[in-house]
Length: 181
Image 1 (cartoon, rainbow, N blue to C red):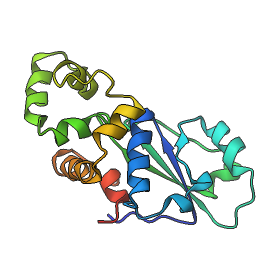
Image 2: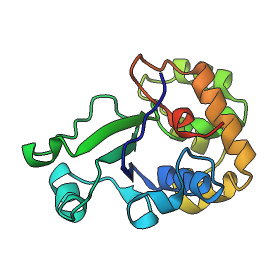
Image 3: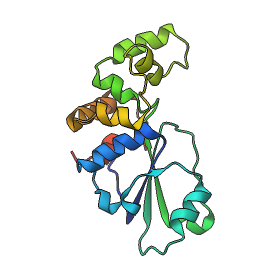
């Protein structure tokens, strides 16, 4: 399933780790679009639909806007008002269970994570594993992720691995789909 981007692009992120990954990929020209093609040339922090409408959609745009939401939740809704529904193409980029899975994959520790998670409780998340086992206490911070993936090839490897090992549902996109391979 090929990802089609219409008109202007807005790129919304969930947290600081996601923002760091988006910045790395944008700075290294790895996406199917450039930083100059996204609204305000910066990823946008996650916000409510009404705030997005007020802050970004009240300007007059000649073309449709593609809103890329980089989040880990498959069920989170983002319902725009009727006035903007036809002006925005919403695409959710799933990073489930969470973006820190990219660090586990780049460390080649997925089997260890799965085994450890099975011995722990069900809600044991990748960031817990990164903090407890890999000893990365600031795994969710922008600076840590930016430094950890300072070699963009390391990040691209992790994104390819995520695509290979994850259960990506039909009609669902991951970071892999945004990259110009």
